Image 1 (cartoon, rainbow, N blue to C red):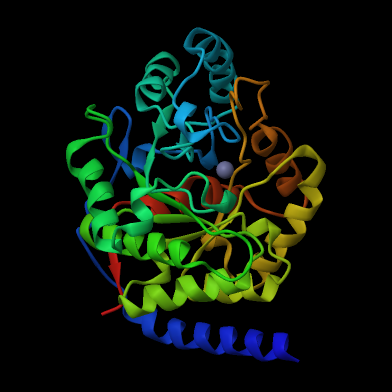
Image 2 (cartoon, rainbow, N blue to C red):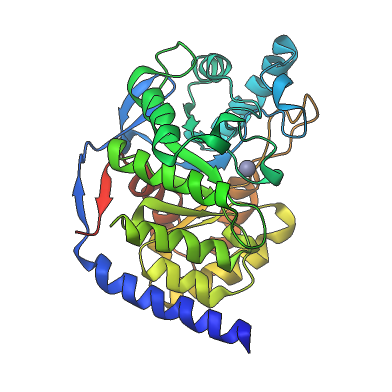
Length: 338
Ligand SMILES: [Zn+2]
């Protein structure tokens, strides 16, 4: 019963947001996104994978997270990226954050040797029991944290000229913690200052969804600025559809050869409600997970797209999801509701 009431309240709240968001007003609409090689017009993005990891040290101690066997890494990832490029992929958003392995110098080397557009991120990863949240964030205010991310947007990351193309954040399972909410608030402040989209690891967590939508509403930011990351794990499809109707981006980012039918079924629900324009597709692959073997990111071009076409999706719909949606989701612009 308690669960039903809370679900009902979430739905009511989404209806409220839907009404509020009908007058989204976009400012700082530059029509660009920052790749590791500088700003490009979003129209140049083409087929984009919005949630992959070219490498990560997720699982390692944060103090060692930036250390890689660089020669081995480049030897493994560059040929793989060339293969991905030959499958039609043009752009990849790298979701490895600071403190679990972000290295923009290596991303730049990969982009320069493969001609794939690579986009990196700012933000801190608040899942994994906050293991990858830096110590200072626990005592800092949301505004102080946002200044670190805004500085990366304005001045570049780690002394380079590479600027982030989005903000990556994460919520742990269960009721949102103070630090998760504070990091999300810092994300909103960053969005308002920079126009960067917030991609937030949320998964199957309705409480985290509610907390995020409430905070967005409190700061008069549209759900269009927010990506529900790992939304394929959400059990409540109705909640996904309602969030999408309110403007949120729904990231189905665990595609594999083995779950193609599951993805088709889920996308058909979106199609029946004219919501294909809110879906993002990716694999959450990893080119060099703690120095290990590649976790593949090729099932979408190799298996899912052919299956979509065989199941009644048109070329235009595939193009909508894999090309037009990522452009629209990550185009730098502030998205206010008033
Ligand atoms: Zn990921």
